[in-house]
Length: 392
Image 1 (tube, rainbow, N blue to C red):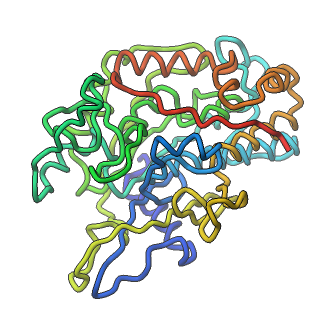
Image 2: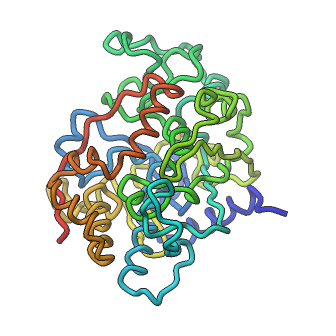
C-alpha cells in the first residue's frame, strides 16, 4: 500500500506543531483568530507577494513571493543545496535524499549535473489551502458572500489570458496573478496554481539547484489538500493532462525534463491555524504576517520576506532562502566540487541576469518557453531581480 494523503499531512502537521511559538500566529482571543496557510515538502507557512515596483530594490535579499507553497519550494531547494555541499566537501558522507551520479549517467542528453535525487524516493507536497489561482476558482466562487467578480483592469485588458486575483470568475483555465485582493499593490507574480503547473515540467528544482541536481527524479508525485479544499474540476483543469496542460502532455525535452503530472489526493486532517479552525468565540478572522521556514538544517521566522526582528535596511535581514543567499550557496558547492567548466562560465557572468541567460540554462529555458507559449499562455515574466554574484 502506498503512502496516503493522511500520512503526508500528519508528517507536515506534526513538524509544524514542534516548532517554537515565534513561528506561529498568536493565540486566539475573543476579538480575533489569526490564520495562516501551511505547505510542506518541508513545513512552512506564509501568504504574501512583493509588489513588482519593489523587486529591483530587493537585489536578491527579499522573497518576492512568500505564499506557503512558494516558501516550501524555496526551503526544499535550500535543503537540497545543503546536502550537495555536504557531499561535495565530505565525499565519504551519504545523504538521505541525494546521491552522486555515475559517470555513465552524465551526458549532453541526460544532463551534466553531478547529483541526483535517490531513484526510490517520491516527493509529496501538503497544502492546508487550495493553491491560489485556477485550482481554487470554483471553490472560491461558492464561498463568496458577494460573488460579483472584479472588473478586468484596463491596463492589463490587452494581455491575453492574464487576470489579477479573482477578476472575471467566468474565465477558467487561465494564468492569474497575485494578489487576490483588489486593494493590494500590483504584482506580476503568478498564482501558486500556475507555478505548480509549470513545476510539472521543470521539476521542483530552482534554476541554481538544477545546475547541480538532475531533474529526472525531482518531480512532485502528489499534492495533498484537505477534503474541504478539493474541487476535482478545478484541479483537473489546472494541472491534469486533459486540462490546460494538454498541449504539452507528450512533450519531452533534453536534460531529463518532461511533463510529469502529479496526483491530487485529499486528507481529512485540518491545520489548527487554517481559516476553518476559527473558534466561535473569536469575532474576527485575521491573517498572520509571520512566515515560518523549516528543514532539518534551517529554522527561520520571516515578516514581509525578511528575517523577523531585522530592519529593512539591515543586510542581516536576508533569509537563507532568498535568491542572493541561495545562489551564493550554489557557488560554494561548485567551488567545493572543483568543476572548472561551470566555474569558468560563472566567472564570466558577474550578475544574476547574465548567468540565468547563459548557455548553462538553455535546456531549462526551452522547457519554460514551450510551456508558456503552448499551455500557460498569458504568462507575463516578472522583472528580473538582478544582483551581483559573489562567492564569498
